[in-house]
Length: 73
Image (tube, rainbow, N blue to C red):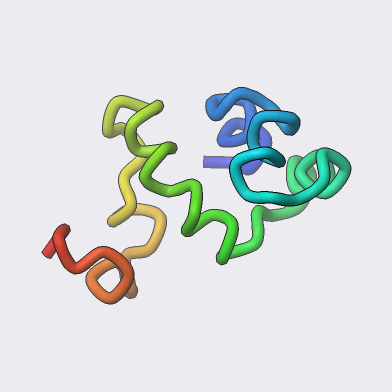
C-alpha cells in the first residue's frame, strides 16, 4: 500500500503526527516518499485495525514481525 493511502486511512497527517510525535509537515512529506520504518512500526497495529485486517503487521514486516511482535508467531 502506498504511503499516501496509509496516511489517508489513518486519518491524515495531523492525526498521524500526533500519534508518532512528529510534525505535520514531516508526515505530509511521507505521502510522496516513504514512511520511515520506525514510524511505520509504531503505526502498524493501528493500521491493521483500521484496515479491518486487510493490511497486517505480517504483511508490512514479513522478515521481522516475529521479533517485533512475538505474539503473532
